Amino acid sequence: MNDTATLDMFPPEVRAPRKPITSADPEAARVLRAQKLAEKHEAKRWVVVENPGTVDEYVWDHCRCSTYREALAMGSDCGVRFDVMFRLPDGGLTTEF
Image (cartoon, rainbow, N blue to C red; front, side, top):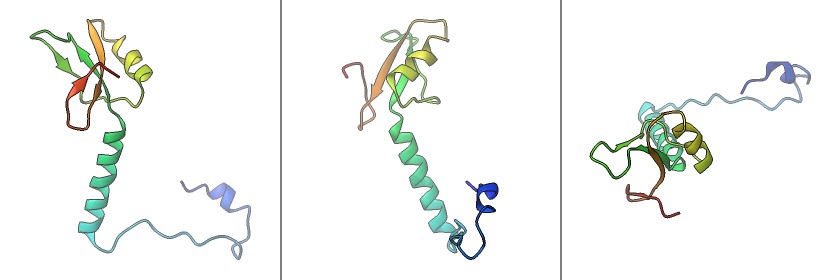
């Protein structure tokens, strides 16, 4: 966040220098981005499952949620039978939480 209005309130001699968030090594930057994306994705383990336990079962992997309540609200908009499940570290789904 670059809040220049707040930064301008202080004289330049007392401001902390801002360092750019870039890496000289593009490969290291790519690895760091991948790690951050994986951590972000890992924190969101609640998923909505349409038609659970049927042949037409469909997991909404494209929209993971960080809380049960968020997933419940998202699933209620779909208009079909759904269940909220928790994704385990091994990738499996469970309703026992």
